[in-house]
Image (tube, rainbow, N blue to C red):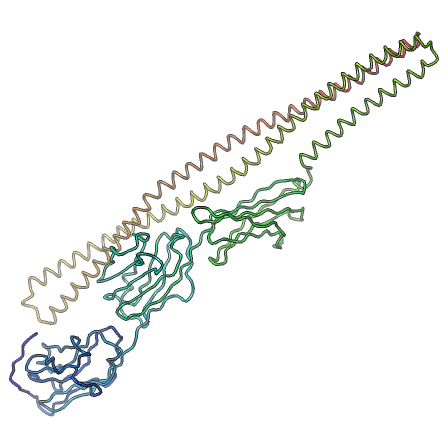
Length: 597
């Protein structure tokens, strides 16, 4: 503390000397420092006693300056180590009081009194309470994105020198981000949030203490506490995290008709599924099937049987209202899906036709045999019996041959149709898998593009921060050099200006260092993530190519079986015709023999 001449002197200028305070109340916020102004007019040096009191307290002395020092034993204990005068300014008649770490109880009337001239002034101090304001509504974020948890001081006072704590009470350790003395405190930070949190350092002076959380995870969902210890105020912010994807539709047919299946993976929280027709009306569908994977994400699926409409357009809608996300996939069902009979029906019809042909052949044969027997009835019984035996033997052989050949052909047709059916199922499955792989490849490609774009932004930001940091460092070195070289030659006001500018540059340098470090960390994450996603994209493209090859091979096999079916059908038709002709020839021979007999 600077010592003042102990001689009690008061050197007034011309005229009456007065103690001048503030005509308006002095307003301060709890936790801040404040100056209660008090000045001698005209300006005169005070070298002995200055009294600051609060008449409503006991003891009433807030600060008693006498003979160059503070008289502590007279001071009210509520103000211990919180008051002081500007000793260098006493010679100019400035007897203002600096009150540190203002409390709500400090509000009241203060008296600035100079005993040597027996005059003083009353100053009114009003103390306000700053509050921490968060968001009354939950903040919604999508997994993988960045999000801002809003928090500010009201009124908008500076938080540059204040400690800011962001915590999650349900975690251990609970500290998400702690900002103290101009930099983050990382040793107490929960490792789940390492390199993913930060404040807006340029906005702290405006009371903005919002938290930026990068690369949001599902586990980040919960309640966050924004706390300013210096004013003992807090706000709770609820973060809701969601995930979503577009649904995929597949078409199948069964005995009931055309069935549409919809599946959507990677949702959080659990979504709802709706089917809509071309006019937007909700269709009646079966219950939604829901499966939750080990990653905590939901997969939902739903099936609906549809009938032919004017447009044949249908929509699968998956939505989650908590995260305000809706995804839709539309499909147009061709008319032939509703008109072409199912494969099972085709098989039944063909089997019935085939049996009808065999029955007709058999009936014709029986009719011709009965006709021959009637014609030969009046012939000799012995010759008739021999002729009948001969005819029966011949015709039985022919019948057996026809039936055996028909059975063999039918079995061959059935086998080929089963093979065709299996290939159709395989083709449908491959087409579904191809569609899924295409969606996966497209999503991966979009993610790679997003990562590359973010990487470019981070590289530009890093370059900009390095230039700014270099510029600030140069200015700081210049101010340091100026301070060392001309310190003794500078006036007090000039020294204070240089020191203040140097301090501002150091604060700015710390802020830039923090931003650069955060940018470097995020850039490193992106550089490690891009090759992984690129490899994932290549893998999806290779899988898609393999499926295409297999699909082409399946179609080739199907075409071969279809040609074979057509060939076998022609052979059956020709064989039946030949058999019919052969039966007719044998019938003629038998009739001729009967006539001869």
